[in-house]
Length: 293
Image 1 (tube, rainbow, N blue to C red):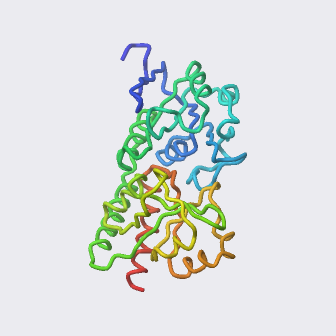
Image 2: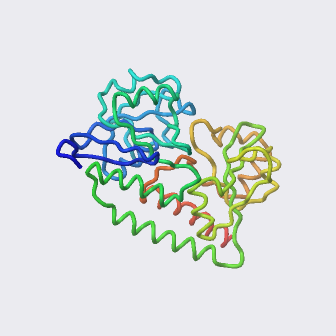
Image 3: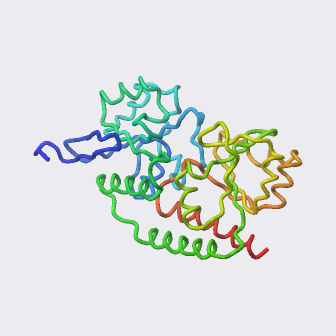
């Protein structure tokens, strides 16, 4: 590191970002910003993807107080001038593979890097959830964050609890899905979602939907979802998913809700130990109740 380079970080594209001082005005994709917040790094601004709207999606912001962090907008509506209006000295983005910046138009992402360093963290299915979390932790440490030992201990505890629940002969079936209106749902393929793979590795019996088109999801009617007879349903709570209170006029969803515990699930999770531990605790509580029931 030269005398002029005080800070540097190599991202998941293999691209090295450098600066003459440690960045302090970080603009981040909402998932990344919420994760950095949990590590003690306060982003100066956040932005969303085309799935988001004019206000931040509370399912994605985690513990980050949206009223205290500037939200610049979402997806293709964003241009370079908007992204630079708060004078960020670092942009933290995410990718689902291939190094492509998620949430921004390719030309916008390209021109943004002409003005400010951009660090991209791969959050796709090619990496384990622990690996994603460690990359964010490395980035946070480079920006001045300390460790989170209490959160790590909580995470270890709930993982041990889930292993014990998954070790018995009778394992409740767990289905992860994203409601897509009155007629259908997108059923998650567990192997494609790092946080769901954690559950599988801990012994949770996650339902694998039928083979067919769709790399991440299998789209099916509510009757087909109900026929899978899960004891626990992990339900997408992002703003682009249909809220469950709008589904109760559907008889198949109502039957599913009566028979299964419904647990909120964010497919774009905050990748910190404390938020991950809270999600695993909700799953463990539901699985334990299903076993006892």
